[in-house]
Picture 1 (cartoon, rainbow, N blue to C red):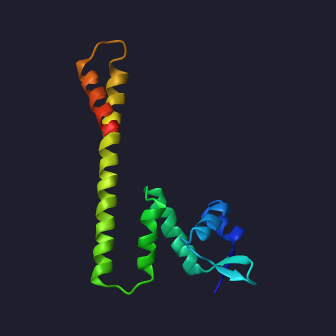
Picture 2 (cartoon, rainbow, N blue to C red):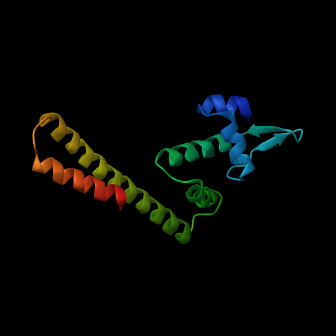
Length: 136
C-alpha cells in the first residue's frame, strides 16, 4: 500500500505541511512513523485528512471534528448513527443560517446599487435588520 511522507501528503491534499504536523501534535490524526522519526500517511489517513479538510471548509471547529473522526473507527451502532445525524442536522442549520444572512446582504447590496444618492426607508430597515443579525 502506498504511503506518503509529510511533504508528499501536504502536496497531494494542497495543504501546508505544518497543518499535518499540527493535527498530529493535537492528536486529531496520528500518522504512522518510519524509523520512529518520519511521519507516514497511509491511504486511510489521507482519506481521514480529506474528511477533516471538508469539515473545516464547512466551518467545523477542531473540537467538533474530533468526536466525528472517532466514530470512523467504531462499529456502526444506533448511538453512532444518532450522533452523526445530530451533527449533520447542526451543520445543516448552520449552513441555512449563513445562506439567509448572505441573502439579506445580497438584497442590501442590490438596494444600495439601485438607490445610491436617494433616501430609502427600505434600505434603512434592511441595514437595521443586518446589524441586528450580526449582533445576535
